[in-house]
Figure 1 (cartoon, rainbow, N blue to C red):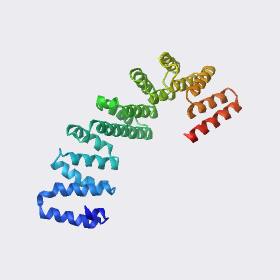
Figure 2 (cartoon, rainbow, N blue to C red):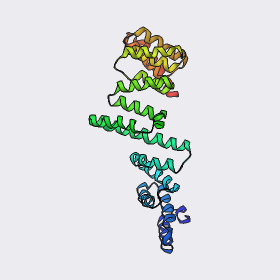
Figure 3 (cartoon, rainbow, N blue to C red):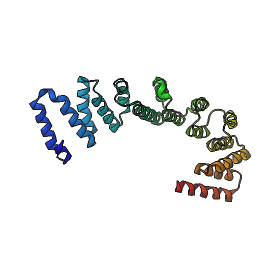
Amino acid sequence: NAAYEIGDQDDADRLLAKAQESDPDSELAVGLAQSQMYLRDGHHEKALAILQRLYIKVPDHPLILRLLNNAYRGLEDWRSLEKLLPDIRRYKVFNKRVIRRVESEVYSSLLASLAVQAKKTGRSEDTDALIQLWHDMPKHVRSIKRVLLSYITSLYQVGEANRAEVLMRKSLKLDWDDALIRLYGIVEGGDPQKQLITAESWLRQRPNDPELMLALGRLSQRNQLWGKARDYLESSIALKAQPEAYVELARLMVQLGEHKKSSDYYQKGLALSTHS
C-alpha cells in the first residue's frame, strides 16, 4: 500500500506477489488489495479479472461484491451488474438507500441502451426486448421514478408513444410528478383530444401547477386550439417563468402570425435558460 500510495505500482505488484508466495492462503487478501489499486487507477478490466476469480471461490464476500459493483459500473457493463444484484441484496452489501440507487442506475441504463439499439436497428425484436425487460424487473424497481421515466422516454424514442401515454396516465393518477407531467405534454398519444381532456381533468386538484399548465398548452397546440394554448402557456409563465414555456409561446405566436411577439418570447426564454 505504501508503494502504491507513492505511485510505484510495479513495486506494489512485486510486493503483493511476494506476499502470496510467502502464504498460499493469502490469495483473498492479496487479490482484494490488488483489485482495489487497479480500480483506483481506473484499470477496471484488470480489477474485474481478479474479482471474478475471487467471486467464484467466495461468492458471499461483501467486499468482493462491492468491488465487483465498482468494476462493472466503471465498464458500464449493466447486464453483468444486473445479474449481481440478487447477491448484493441477499448479502446486504450496501444499505437499502444505496441498493435502491444501484438498482435505479442499472435498470435505467439498460433501458436506455436497449432503446438506442431498437432505434438504430428498427427491429421489432429489439423493441420487444425493451418491453420485456420492464416486465421482468422486480416490481419495487418499476416504482423508482428514474427507472419509470427512463422506460417512458425509451418507449417514446422507439415509436411506442401510445404505450408510453397509457403508462404515464396510470402513474400520474397514483403519484403526481413534475417530470412525468412534463413528459405527458410532449409524448404524442394516439388520441390527442382524449389526452387533452385527461390532462384538463387534473386541473381540479391542481389549478396552480405550472408544469400541468405547460403540458396543457402543448396538448392544446396539438389539438390546434390556439386560444386555449395561449391561455395555458401564459398561466404557466405567470406561475413559474420557464424557458420551455416561453419557447412554446413563441412557436404559438408564429402560428398566429404575431412574429414580433414570437421574437420577444424567444428572447425571454433564451435569457432565462442562460441564467439558469
